[in-house]
Image 1: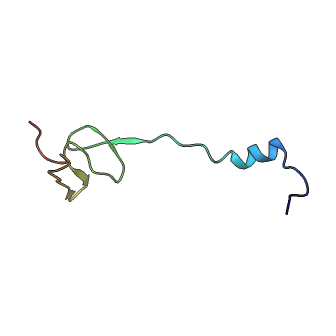
Image 2 (image 1 turned 60 degrees about the horizontal axis):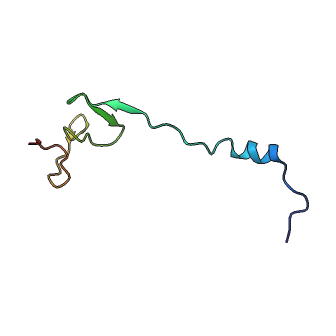
Image 3 (image 1 turned 120 degrees about the vertical axis):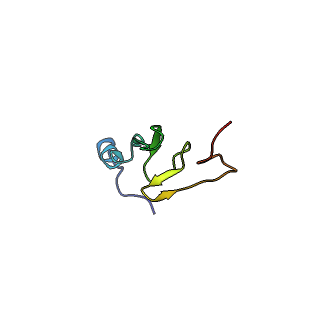
Length: 66
């Protein structure tokens, strides 16, 4: 079944106005001072939130680098 009438450019663009990607906002890790995405572990120190620090030796998260 086909649409009765073609959708206008303005109507299509109004619908798509919310589809744009938003820029990623980075915070600062309080331990290492490096940029860190919210709710993610810091690559340098492994800090996530107060009381939670993650160490993954295989990925180099939260371990001392040579």
